[in-house]
Image (cartoon, rainbow over all chains, first blue to last red; front, side, top):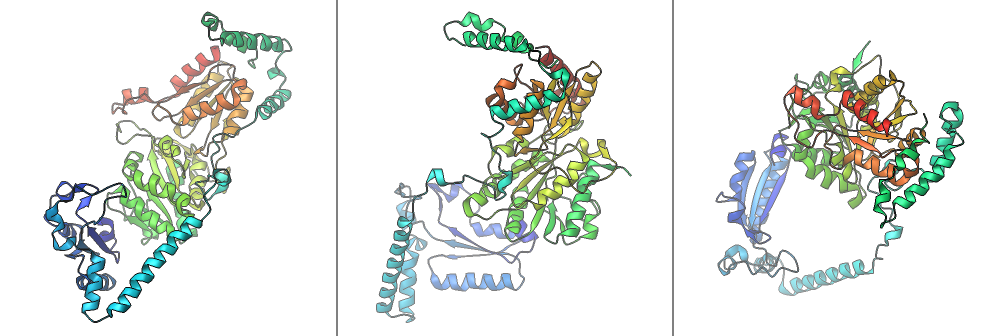
Length: 237
Length: 322
């Protein structure tokens, strides 16, 4: 909000104040009486309203949009509502007090809006019913569509978090054992001094034997043997 | 002509602003006549007053705004005043920029410049190296230029890349490192550089530690020991092939980094070399990092806290004796 005000962005922030952050009530989230008080501090213009009141929403939010477009500072609208379900499917919202549920903003805003529209003679009840039916069908189609989508298959997924494919880091990639050997030999063949002497292969065999013995779990004392000394024989010096 | 590491960064930004209207610089104190805490944007606001913009002191908001601009087709360069403070923007960098392409198929071409690493007397909050932290997370490219030439070409490349780039520029190199001229082209992004050839020991390093490692190699050369220094250039992607090829030639590996010792780039390099090139090693690989404490203020303590040419030499000698 601060940067939006500093940059004078044509912005309307509608804060739906549903009075809870998961189960924590507002009095443990902020200490000012009304969230809209924050607007002044940020250099916003602030308004609050009952978020279940359709006419008020049209009026206040519509006005805020007009003001933002006209070059006024960013606008904050705090719309009071109550979350009418739990935070998720698993949550019965039993922590919401009965007193809270009796507040005006605790109404179901969709039902209130429908009622307002009918009472204002903007729509007859029959039409409103058909609209609600269509809405339910559309919702159903949406979930059908989703359930028909193929489930993702892990082995067909490209597992790529970058759009620049050639810059992807390959943790498991790198030279194969063979490529490494080749690289070692190429360098060595160019440099007489760094070619390992023929007897180093004998030491290689001895050292690998020592390492194998030392890795036997019940022969701990053997792990004290010094594979490093055998390794030294293949050092390029 | 002589140009410093810092001037190379400024020149790269000037070129980017001139060549591409989508580029803008966004950060604390970068605009106006001030030109940034380290003067990396000095004079740029005069030439591009609309595109070199001061921001409020809120790293999270700065990066969030840059992400929005990038999604709308811009190429923002965010300057953090110090790498240390980028921790305040972790949510935007890691959770938003880093995941955006994966979640939506829309890449976020932001470049976040982090003035990184220690200088004398800077203390615990103005000295840290954050590259390993950013490299740990998916969706980001992490650059750590060690030369004036790379500082220039890699920043230009960072802005051209369609994905988020964390560009770690080292404050100690700002004035200490000089070059005769700037190149037109550098190595491809993601390719490590052999900064010095040798056949006895491979030192893998990046950023300021490449310079310390080169100084150490010079010292060891006087004793007849030939150290190969690999400059990673980008820690992510990590050029494992170049590292393995070097270890194949030398049989010994020392990793040097300025960041804290637990985990990180050194540990990653060693993990890759031991898992993919165990048979190439003649001795156990070693690493040298800063100490596992906050970074001290006092110059005496600071220079003992980070790896330097002297303790790199000591570590290398010990490894060569094994």
